[in-house]
Image 1 (tube, rainbow, N blue to C red):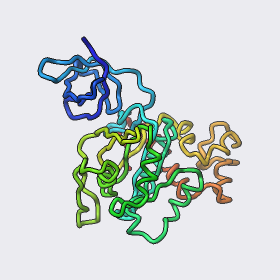
Image 2 (image 1 turned 60 degrees about the vertical axis):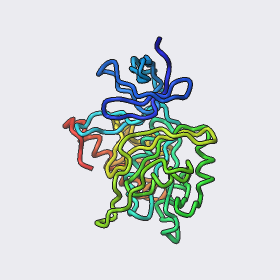
Image 3 (image 1 turned 90 degrees about the vertical axis):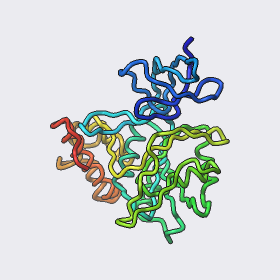
Image 4 (image 1 turned 180 degrees about the horizontal axis):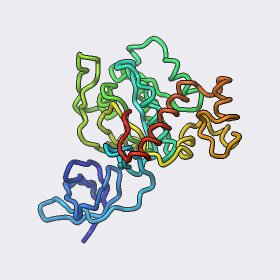
Length: 299
């Protein structure tokens, strides 16, 4: 008889499902049309050898997406309440990439937490990090090496289901090992050339903390963009734009070159940071490019 379960790992041709009793089972998919994600609630049929077959996926409460290689919507993880975006002084922070994850969190919606790791390598918080904190984002400054900030980070993850994302080499696997108190993930050293991190996580996997928190570790990336249908949707992904939306001269203002734009006026007086606005214009170009060509734009 079919049972209910939770997808806790996704591999190329199968998934790992956690059953009601807590045991984990390698499961095939009953149909190619089924595309379960880590975090999905599923129906699965146990087999005599301990494996199983996933026969259905329950409705999702939230969904993290990205633009795939063909410019189409690709689902990444399901049923999240939190996105933890990890950055670090080394490799140098990609602030535009971080902004894109923040936009994804706003549009899901999910809580966004910025985790600035390797604080032992810096003397002061970078200005972009301070700007993000000023507009209301939660920032956790951590060092997996020294244990700095880990207790506060774990407390904020209690009873949440999050996904850990960010650049390769920022120490995500080391953070996870420190939070779990075990070597749950292989930890890769930075490559010498350019300080780009090796991708040490090859498959998305769900882990649990003792305080009831759950989080999904996803492979590190150098490029990411959320799938966005329109500029009207995109503007809602920048929380500092919201007090000014609806105050522009034109109802369909894109906040680019239009006259009497309330967002541009806020930019001119410093209420909106120029760096964040540049992230917005880059995503505007991505949205327009994807709609024109149906191919993934270069970013």
